[in-house]
Every structure is written in C-alpha cells, then in structure tokens.
Length: 110
Length: 113
Image (cartoon, rainbow over the protein chains, first blue to last red):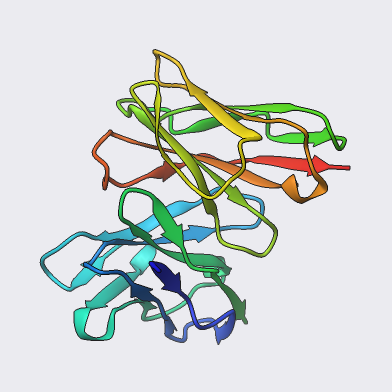
C-alpha cells in the first residue's frame, strides 16, 4: 500500500543547532513530495515541494530537503534552528490526493 | 490576495446531530479537498471536488458528503455525528491539475459531545 512514514515522533533540539527530520515513502512511482508545518491550533503551511529535477530543494524559513530515490527518502533540514521553529512537521506525498505521515513534533530548548 | 478561508472556526455538536462546514478556495483555484485531522495524527483525506463533482474519495463512510458550488467554494456535511468525528477539519485548494500543490485553510475544530 502507498504510504508515508515519519520515523521520529518527537525531536528536541537546542536553539542554534541543526535539525533533520526524516521521511520515507512507499509508492510504485515517485510521487510529488511536500513538507508542511503546523503551529498549535493552526492550519498547514507549505515549506517546500519536490516534483522533479534537482534533488536538493529550498523552501521558506531557511528549510531545505533532499530527495534520495535509492532510499525512498525526502528528509527535511535546517542548519540553525530558531525558537519559532517549534511546531509539528508533516511530510506528504501527492498521487492525486495528499497522504501524510503521522508528523514529527519539534521542541526547541533555549 | 485572500488565502483559503473556512467557517466556522469552532463548533460544538452532540451525537446524532448534523454539521455543515464551509470553505472558500484561494483566488484562482478551482479544486477543493477536505481532510480530517484527529488529535495527534496526520490529516486524512476525505474527498476532493472539481467542477462541482466529487473526483476522488478517501476511506470515509457515506455520512460524510460534500458539495462544490459554481464559485468553487465547498461544503462538507457530516450526518449522524459520532464522538469519533471530533477533529480538526481542513480544507485545501489547488488549481485543478491533479498533482498541483494544495494550500490549506486554518481549519474548523469540531467537538462532538
């Protein structure tokens, strides 16, 4: 079955440290891939997307993601985390409808 | 340019009642998708509307139904509410191409007592 997996439920990172969130997908062909962020009680904001081409994509708020076909992964990274990056992060794949992973909660400590 | 809007923001209903949620898509978008997000989980696809027709449906019972109007706005209706229907309901809009990026509204928080 087609699915998106986020192996990490919760990650705690110090402010200024780097962050990497993992995402794996299981699809017959490479779907379109997305990362969204959700602050408490809010809707989803698009961080970045991958359709094809360059495997390193840049997004908003200093985030980037790397697509690796051989590993069926689309990991999200940020070199230096700010306290405002504390939120829930969702990886999603689109093969006509969006299928989301379970999400990773990011806590930023001072 | 207004983004995706949803109303109401919060709603409290009792079991067995019916509820209608509303969504206006982003300007220039003609496709609306609805998602249910239970607490602590990722959003789950309910259905998608394009050209006033249901184009795709997720694994939700017939109690969940929808409609799209000529101005592309949409409604989600849920009949015979169950406690398990308590969730954040998200609407997303896109420009009609099946794999185009979807933009989300702020959601409607439904509590069923």
